[in-house]
Length: 244
Image (tube, rainbow, N blue to C red; front, side, top):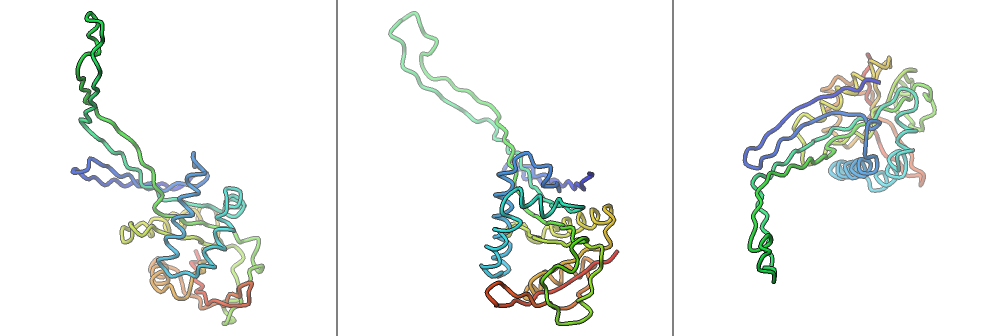
């Protein structure tokens, strides 16, 4: 499967650091355990900034974000996808001097380790950090099985060929860099290539900035939904759709 990739480079001459930004699929991960750890931490970071209920965060971590099998079952069944936005930094520490002091040998003829030795070299290391995530779940074969109860009759009718955008999160250190728009455009590209009829988003009704962001990206606000938790409490959610 072809996965959209976006590259962008930032440089900082003072720190000798270059930053490459790439969009890749979770399926292409070569270090699943570390990527999953970063994904879970990033999700918590994003949800706490947006004042998401602690119960919702913990429930999500126990569900599709629990482990690699849960991720694969949720996002790679059918035509789904899970996308990561990576920042890769190559740090160059030039002219690192390593000095070794040794004790002179008692053998006067052996002077190979006598005194101080200096070694200057350039060392490079690659740092890979996940700064944004988003999942696309194929709900085309499960339409009608969701437990959202609509207040408005027009939101109770579901398009039969949608995918659902889930777990969208950008790290708090990377806000206002256009990373969210990059991820949504990658989702739209994947959904169109996979012949979905559109994308559905359900997010907290209190997350006004997120709702405004999605509408700017072309999503239509379809109204509010009432989600009932297992303990009988309820939360109001915003329902948005982008139909192709």
